[in-house]
Amino acid sequence: MIAGFTTAAVIVAAVAAVLAVVLGLAGRKPSDLSLAGPALLELLLLAQAVIGIAAPFVGNPPSGNPVEWWAYLIAALIIPPAAIFWALTERTRWSVVVVGIACFAVGVMFVRMQIIWTLQGS
Image (cartoon, rainbow, N blue to C red):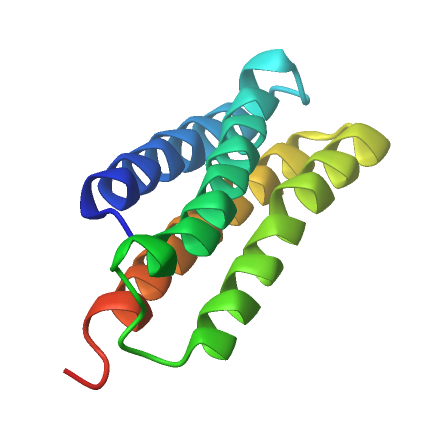
C-alpha cells in the first residue's frame, strides 16, 4: 500500500465524517454536500482495490494476512453505498449523521488496512 494515499484517504474520511455529522446535527437533510464525502470515499476505495492488486506485482506484498486485508477492503467498499442508500431512502437529519459515522468507519478501516499491509509479521 502507499502510505501517502492512505493518509489522504483518512483525511478525506475525517473531513467527510465531521461535515456530515455537523450538517445532520444542524438539522440538514441529505444533500449533494453531505453525500459527496461518501461518494469520494468509494472512489478512493476502488483505487485502493487497484493498488491492492498491483502492489504485490511491483515488489510491495503485504506483510500481514492478505485474506484479512481483502476482507476489510470488501467490507469498506460496501459501507459508503449503504450509507448513501440509507440517506436517500430515509431523508432525515439522522440519516446524515449515519453518513458521517459511516465515513468515520471507513477512515478507521483505511488505517487498519495500512497496519495489516505494513506492520504485521515484521
